[in-house]
Length: 299
Image 1 (cartoon, rainbow, N blue to C red):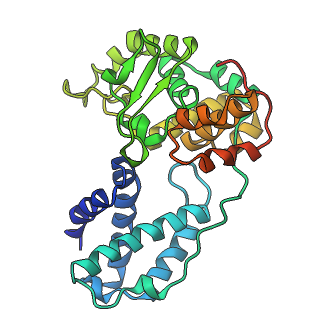
Image 2: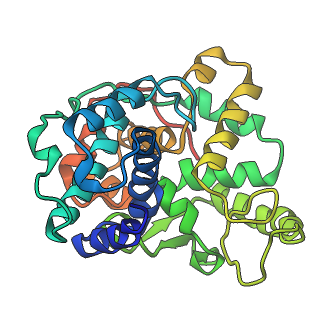
């Protein structure tokens, strides 16, 4: 069953999915699904039934969120299901199944008008004040100050930073879209300090490879991944001792929501915010106009 995973990644590439989505979510979801299904003694895809998939979704609803703690949201459970649906589309095309069990199921996406969690202007200031080193400030400035998605954070390389010109390049955003992201003076200063004082230390760690040009490195010299970014943000939040902020279980996604909301409430034109975030559709950006928040700080 594991042999299908490489074909699955190739199939999603053909459909136009971004690498960050394929490798950061869909492949991971399928690997977990296969691991779960194995307990039934299933050896072939055609043996899997609607009952198996429903059991898996119920398991997910009770499973702890490995990144931020607590239970998985219905949106996350639905995302796992969509990964399975796409897999079965591929299996049908390859002729490896006769009956597609997902075609016999109705799993609805949760409403999109659910309240989005954001941090306030004061909480952002508290998090900056709680940074213990230049690496943490760089994480906060890239995620909040530049509004990068987690996949964009993971793929960012040194060559993508145009510090003298005041912008960075996102080479492969959502839908493989390329864009330039402007940086404030404060963000540029944070990134320069990280390059000067922190990254050289991390390149001396045991797992660093000289060909690795990832901008953000973890404490053993490897490229930072989603879990580490989220853990770093939550560590800052805990140091503020602000229980409201701690309870929000900050993630890179929440920080991106926050900068979008703050920029709009500052009065920035919605089309400029759309371009800044890398949204294709204006309607995606308009979601943030319905969130009440305080006026954003000067980053």
